[in-house]
Each structure stands twice: as structure tokens, then as C-alpha cells.
Image (cartoon, rainbow, N blue to C red; front, side):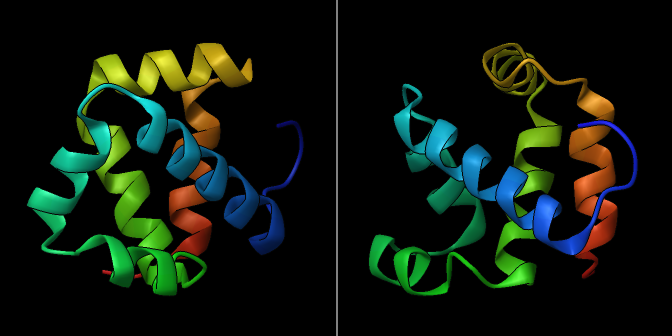
Length: 90
């Protein structure tokens, strides 16, 4: 992702990250365990900025998963950091 990170591009990146985590071995289970979310709640709230920001926090905390995601999407990890900043939240 080149240039400015918009709220829409940040959300798109985070949703791609969610798909990646969901398809990674054990990633979704770890995300739900650490976040306290269950699958129905995650599905219902997946588009909310605070959920997406939390997902990016999860991804940023796992270097191996982050590198794999960035390789798959052909992006720099800085884009994930920028998306997290744009989405805001605690």
C-alpha cells in the first residue's frame, strides 16, 4: 500500500488480515482465546474499527504470522502499523 492510508484502505487491509488469520493453522483459535471473542460475535462485529484494530494488534504481536501475512499480500509491515494507527482505538 503506497501513499496515505485511508480509513477504507485500513479496514480493507484488516479484513484481509482477518481472512489470513482465519485460514492460518491455529491463528483464529489463538485470536479468540486472547480476545475473549467467540466466533458468532467475531462474525457479527468483524467490520467494527475497534475489532479490526484489535485484530491488527494480534497480528503485530506475532512476528511469524505478521511476516507470513505481509509476504502473502506483498506488503511491508509498515502498512499494517499504519492501518492500526488509522483504525485507532485503545
